[in-house]
Length: 100
Image (tube, rainbow, N blue to C red; front, side):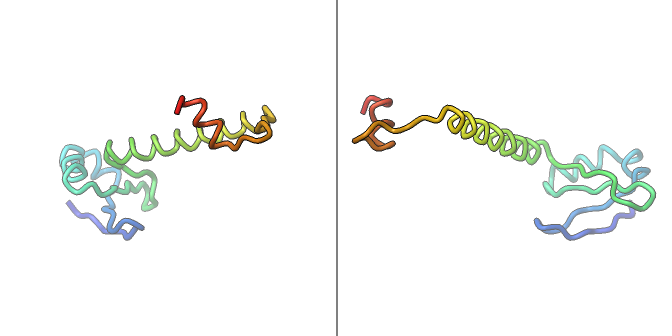
């Protein structure tokens, strides 16, 4: 298989054409599993897609979802306009809620 190598922030990415993908999907998936490096798929000599490992996809999806939930929680707290009771710090309130 005739492949080119591209440089990315994590090292080297393999580059294959859409035709090579169709002809050798099994081999590409095996190589992806072995190296963990993304594979760029080109169509008409332009990058069209990237194949990443399931592990990498899960990491990225979990990070994105966690960021979204964090922002949502902060927004709800801000909208609620909650104030700390006089004489108590937020740390005191957390300890009280936890029962410590």
